[in-house]
Length: 339
Image (cartoon, rainbow, N blue to C red; front, side, top):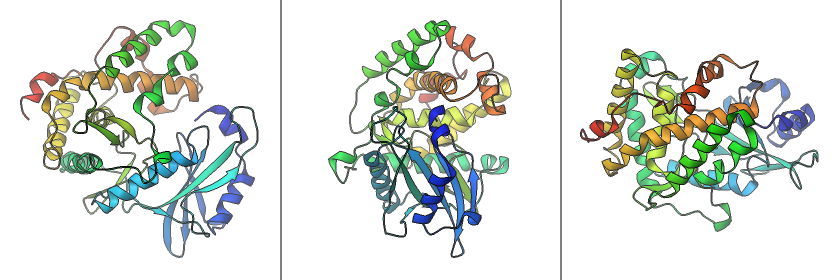
């Protein structure tokens, strides 16, 4: 989240949002949010999640596109948390935001979701068949998205390139010029990849253990805020990226990465057909996420006061990117032969 958005957000804005959902302030708990303000609340004996986003992050039409696709997937059998209406029956509530000069006609947008049942996955879940199930869910999403068309043209979601173009120059310091150049070179390479219905479409791009709950062994996905038009293999790469360690070079870490990927793709291919040759592009998409995240951390955080997760990720990250060290030491050419 941009620092200036945090500065203009207030208790008064939250109070207005809660009023539109008929929620009392004492029924609300603030949760960690990376790009939005996230809350949990209870109403009529049910638990819900409330997300408040500035229009500089997502416009009303973009959020409408997220909801349209999410409903389509749930109707198609994807286990995901549905959107719920406000007191006036709206799926998206729009609220005026203070004018800072950063965005014209600034506003905040609020969306509420059913809270997924269960809890974040445990180590036992990961060891007990979760990668296969997660792969099947993503495969189902990719099979469905090939037939998806937005309900209205104006709510079409952004493309992967819309999300990353120009961000390196904007947020990285001059001392990171090597990384800026490498990032833009990678974008140019990826833009030349073919885009067809069997390999490219609207995808989640943020499927990881922080964006689903497990209840009685069953996954329920949430947080579709980053959905965008991209290659299916990018979605797969993101799941792998977050399932492995930040320094995935040791024997044990690499063994887990290989196991996760093999089980995940085994589940995936039960639900969708994807040319295995695409899997050879995974190192490029892992590098895209690695550099993208490096840039986002520079944008959104105080580098001298990072949380433990970001501290771990940023450890020697500049060196690793500048020296083209692979994010994970796996031979994806060899692994594709399994499929």
